[in-house]
Amino acid sequence: MKKGLLIVFSGPSGVGKGTVRKQLFKNESLNLAYSISMTTRLPRKGEVDKQDYFFVTKEEFEEALKKDELLEHAQFIGNYYGTPKFYVEKLREEGKNVFLEIEVEGAKQVLDYYKDDPGVLSMFLVPPSLRDLENRIRGRRSEEESVIRQRLNKAKREMDLKKNYQFIILNDNVNRASEEISRIIELKLVAYHKEQELKK
Amino acid sequence: MKKGLLIVFSGPSGVGKGTVRKQLFKNESLNLAYSISMTTRLPRKGEVDKQDYFFVTKEEFEEALKKDELLEHAQFIGNYYGTPKFYVEKLREEGKNVFLEIEVEGAKQVLDYYKDDPGVLSMFLVPPSLRDLENRIRGRRSEEESVIRQRLNKAKREMDLKKNYQFIILNDNVNRASEEISRIIELKLVAYHKEQELKK
Image (cartoon, rainbow over all chains, first blue to last red; front, side):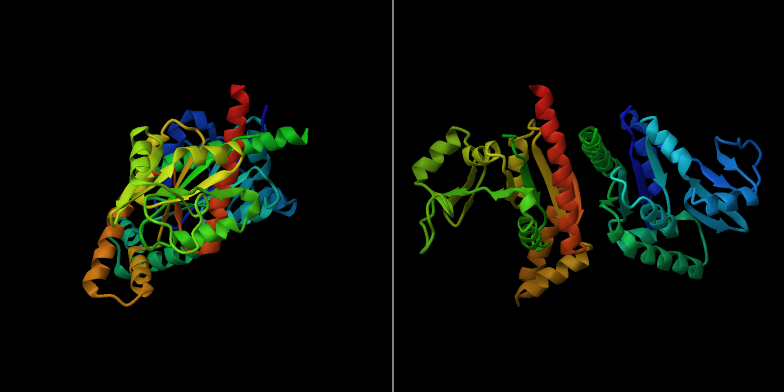
């Protein structure tokens, strides 16, 4: 079994990461899989442990942190969220390409953690223009101007981090961007598998 | 000897293709080579046949056209210019990756000609914004507003053709863009060579 990639997919808030991700998952030949996050928050109705999240106690989460078992983590409204390494690696060992759609702060932690792994592919999705991003952020819902300004400023700060990624993908069109990303994943996979063969 | 790629590198007027190309040619491990154009214009002082251009007569050029020996061609101030296939293929057979920096019309012809060749890599360089492109075009030299307008409109029309390329590269920074392009060339080369091996 050839080991899969870890694909770190990021970009500013509002750029359309989710739409592109959905398009990519339709392409079964890419062999993509979601990683599952670990969290200390309680399961909501219908949520299943080890499927939606790994639900753990605060003590278990802090133990995982201490043992360096999380690729990244953050706190949100008093709860911890993180990406456990063992599950990402399990999927990769099964030949899956693990797709991590993640905001820039989490991405930075993951890329630091994995900086010497040749099987990591990092991509940053950018809007055709800041004006376009503003339209997207404004279009989402009717909010106060000050809130929209805040979101836009956050997105601009996030955009400054694009240089940390191997590939910058222009989201001019969902289908085109998804095709380009698929092309990069396929090429990277061939190169990664070849590298693994040579190591044997 | 493993066959090299044909790299078609294009983008709107003024985006900075030449600067990126120079940066790429500094990286010797990419094994890049220029193709040589064929032209009916007379050699200028210091120009050497088969080095700067293949200098030919109008009859020879038209004969080459008739025999479908040119990947693309255009007329400029009464002279023909074109890219002879034999030279591109000779370099590729020698293991070189042939780098064709070319405007969008010529690129379209080349990509049509080579549409079934798995060794073709097409990339389109885009500016961070149209405003940025305008600044670049204005900065080049002091020209009349109407001329600048014309150039800018041409560049915008050229931008519309970006969807015809396999990869769109954001020229936010020459070094970063060149690194991303190098990465794509390296991945593509591994995949292309693997494909050739499997065919044997």
